[in-house]
Image 1 (tube, rainbow, N blue to C red):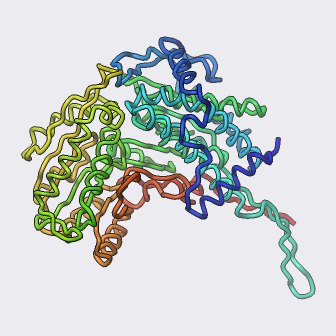
Image 2 (image 1 turned 90 degrees about the vertical axis):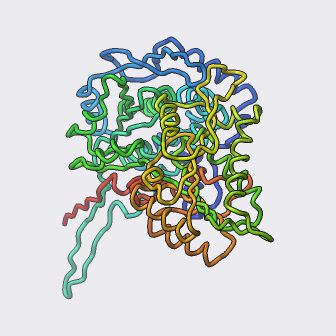
Image 3 (image 1 turned 60 degrees about the horizontal axis):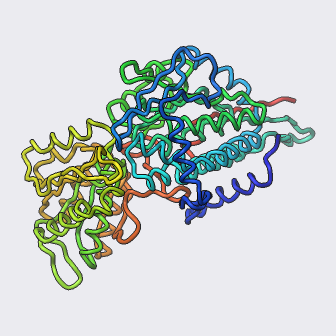
Length: 550
């Protein structure tokens, strides 16, 4: 086996893109790029899984078959059963598989992993339907997030891993002059993988959030155990199946990558986390469990947890495109994105425009109308909101109605023509004062938006920074036409290790992070300790060991 010219070209382009940080996409985000009939065929393939056992995994002798997924669009159970295994069985297999994988050359590992991405790309459409009916994302978002965007993020981690592993020579002759003689040593340098890696998936982005850690660990020679959320298994199960097929095709042990499923009433995550053989953990999800993972001893941990994302509105060129942009950002996938804005800090004195000052009331009314306009647009609402993944999110929306806050816009049922039983609602907007930090300092995951009246932009910035430092933030949107104030916003939010998106309008939103360019999560505040994808995300997965001999 060797790294083919085709796959070497893909890797080289990805590495160049990582350094350039300009736009690059190996996998087109348009469904038709994968065939005119691909969507129809993908739906047929998805439907064929329903009410059947998922038999594509190359993991033999399961102890049972389990599955509990249901569609947020239809409200019906998918009826798919996945092979389940005893934890010791999974861990022992992972350890055995790693003993061979760690000695596979860097080029050969890259060959297998790029091949797996190419295999996965042929299944983007069925993966899209699998994502749609487990997460509640609308079809186009499901296609892009779990298909090309996820593959690009995986390739990014893979490419950076390839580069870091090749940073130093594998062997050298070390020749030190000592006067009348030289000391000559043969030196070998080897990147030794840390051990079995556990990837803990989430229910809203089961592929996009999982594959960076999967491919970073695999590229650096570690075997992996993928533990999906029990309500969102099918999308990542397809990915794992293709990785196993790519390994098998090259004569390697497919158990280098395993799927470990569980059920809500008998979770295995903690037991896997605490197992001595598991040396690394990638986690995406809520802060409570994330804090537990970060506190485990003798583990290398990469987390993305909850955050409280802010919007700071100081001044605008034109208010209309600003409110339209923000309305879509908070409405997309019903706010079920870790990058979605929650807290809107708006000065009581108003927002400066190009030729006027928009009063606080005017800005609030404009935002409310723009957000409500999506809900009242039947052609736009269903595709924007998708459906609510978890019943707990619906309960959270209802619970905030009992808070001591004015309801500016109540949530309402959103009708889907195709899916009349869809679990879909429009956002709720609450109005608060700056003193109400007991409410807005919490992440209220889902379609919940808080308008917070502040004394001025200085107070808005102070509060946004405090929220980031205390509770974490992944994004911050700011609108400011004064360069000195804009620079101050950047400077202060940098101290909270939070990136700022300034003056976004049109077809780009604060929610979006692009592979090969944007770092997703900085790793510097409580929202997470790792970043997709910087060198640390790769280098903590292996250790350089040097051998010497005469």
